[in-house]
Image (cartoon, rainbow, N blue to C red; front, side, top):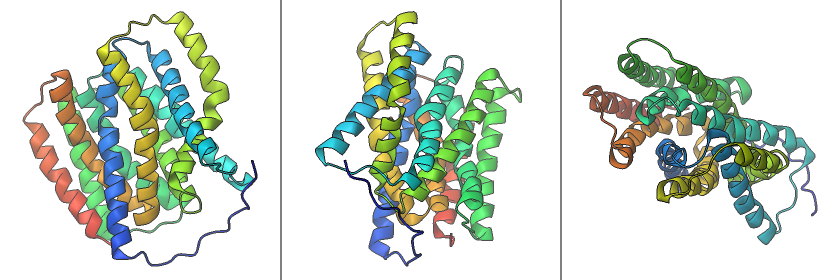
Length: 303
């Protein structure tokens, strides 16, 4: 395959209102896909070990992504893009799925969802450092208020004590935010779906032997839930969701797109009740109202 020429830094241009609206819709679809990740992972853990689930989902997603790249005859990325793709791969393809899956062995999906609700603020902070974005004070105030609501909910749910699962989740926040930030930056110079597709393919030399090793050591019990959960985290969360997510970030900017993820833990709470039968406390709807207000403010604030 031929190699793309190295891209220079993109010129900042005004994005038309229809493009912003479509970008917001794509980012929102990504959030909806991600909101099902934890319930699907919980289903997958019913039949797979944590290492097997993470490795197999990466292999399956890479096969889908690689098939799309080959079918469309997409050229290899420019050499300058590979370090960024490696960050995306480490954070989004390997780090976040592995750390959250390990956490979900002992944590409920509802608790994990609200801890990961800090991801929008973490992503915005790393974006400011890495990409040089400078959101307004109103934006930061609303983002911090949303994060505070999530933290308060988490502390109330856990009784103020951090567990090993919480440590896994906080580490997942950092690596995923780094992957989102780098992926959003790359999506300005190459199509967003190619960012995650090449990151998945880049992991194949590791994910294939890892899957074989994990499957040989962890028992597998196939069932409707475990198969459905595996297929969703592989195709929906790991590939299709990230395709629309990166396209949305490229259109409306990393900080504003990241704040849409404040709605993700609330959607996951709904799925945890409907799909897993988990019970919510009275604090859930109160947090929902606070977070939705923050989302409205951040989307109106100049970022």
